[in-house]
Length: 257
Image (cartoon, one colour):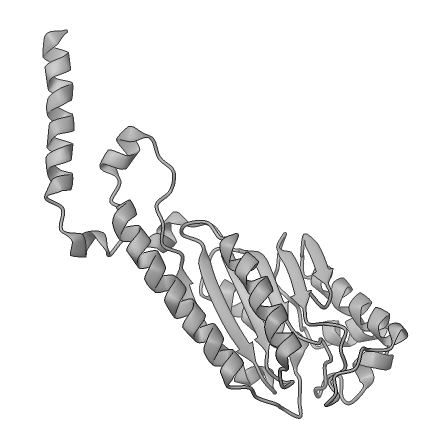
């Protein structure tokens, strides 16, 4: 029994020696994406110029969205402006952090909490810098190809073989103005007619079981940004909610904040 105990202590001693001699540079190369099983997707609609209300809503909501992520979860930020072909991925990285593990797991893991915290600080700083850049460099476009922009963003997640989208946050007034739904069509067309047109064009979201939340909805895209009339608001909201659910969304929440 003493021999077994001595052998066990020797193994632990070897592990500790290996950990002590590990090179920080190598440890910092941890593949955090391999630790995660989900993707968080943020889509920012830049087709309408922001005001202070918009900025406040976006910053406050993104904070809670960001904090809900787990170590290893991928964070993708896309910016939509004008045509869906102009969609840009402005941030794409996996959240640094070490998973919970027991004593032996911590001894054998290549993930180092101290280095992971430093990597997380760099990850957070880069994310905030990209978000601030979006807010400081407003754009305004005549077109607003929103349905196809969402479809393209979720298609890219799937095409890149990323983990499935767990939470999808969209900042937009949802007022489509594109070749599919020109002018004021989204405001006046019945939900069933819009969905049929989107289905015929094969425009679909890929959001199986995802938590979907839209903020910034309920204000007109006119210069003074007045509230949408209630009948238009209800119609547009019902259309988008039905489309998200057709794409597999597990829950859908649409509102100003």
